[in-house]
Image 1 (cartoon, chains in turn red, brown):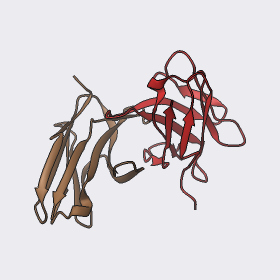
Image 2 (cartoon, rainbow over the protein chains, first blue to last red):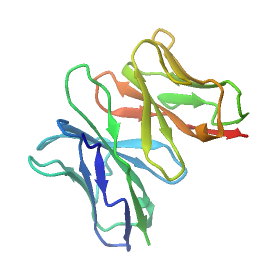
Image 3 (cartoon, chains in turn blue, purple):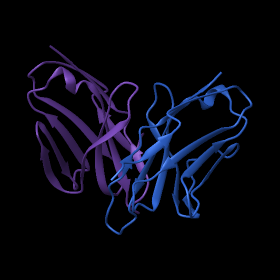
Image 4 (cartoon, rainbow over the protein chains, first blue to last red):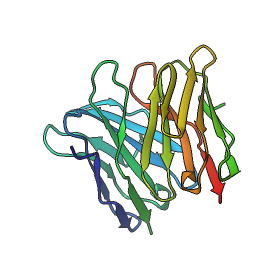
Length: 115
Length: 109
């Protein structure tokens, strides 16, 4: 059973370009979470999604950031018109979404560098 | 004040020492994770617990729900234990994680 997969592992973008980060949850998991780790800072929640539904996006910046988890395919975190401050490690985690099951499994992360 | 606080922020130990990292939280939680992160590396979940104590090899995690406090212990520490250890609270609704700032552990040979 493959773990949570993220790609790319490293992404370099110039200011103003778009960044697309992908997350494939563990098999059988229907809930995905995105977290951001800025340099020298702790992890922060961004967004929580179920298939075709955003459950909690209270941690997402109001502009330029969006996330989706379609019925088929991976979850996508999209950052438009990237700025240097977006440089960070972005981790996704998945869970089965069953009542009382709180374990989250993390992917290896995508390190975004904005030049 | 952060909802999840860890101490110490940095910890240096000699190989073989017993290590304790503490985590206090101020919100209602469903469970608490202890995570490990190596430099430039991914995040590994060490434990998830909602009560009592769990043990895995040289690692022990405890939680006291009434006192809103958890500890991670490492017995017979080894240089390969050097990493950042992070506690993360699962909210009462059972979804998002709220993270402590992490404890940077360095174990010297």
